[in-house]
Length: 202
Image (cartoon, rainbow, N blue to C red; front, side, top):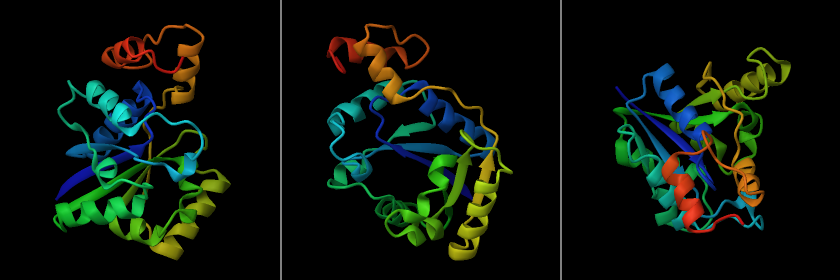
């Protein structure tokens, strides 16, 4: 069975931590490819001055130019409006069919709040959840309780991964640009050049 990973996010900008998550999940779980999907409008970040979706998509495409199995997918941007994961899973399920296993890649912080998202049952029914441990241990009480709850409530298929985590965030990148600091080893070179040439985040 073909296995396709999905990594959503604002990607403002995409950085090496995002790419590390995608590659790590792909390697550990034997994914055939990973779709990296920038949100159109993130309802969770309303009023936070997020860059235009077309710009974020362009940076993502530049970052993945040399990556054969990481794909910049504009599904949520084409759909427009608020980006809800349940709608994305519905669309991808129709596109790829039952012969394909969708694997949604998240961080453990997201695992703890995912049941509050719009129509979480659609997400848990439609894909396996691959969780990268960034803030908690696999055996922490918070994670253990949430796993039990999600499996009982939604029969969720959740796998906790051992992917190494890079201590990078998009907020860190934007702040470094404002402070005139370099982005060496933090974002792909083409992304750093795009940010500089377009005077972003100043």
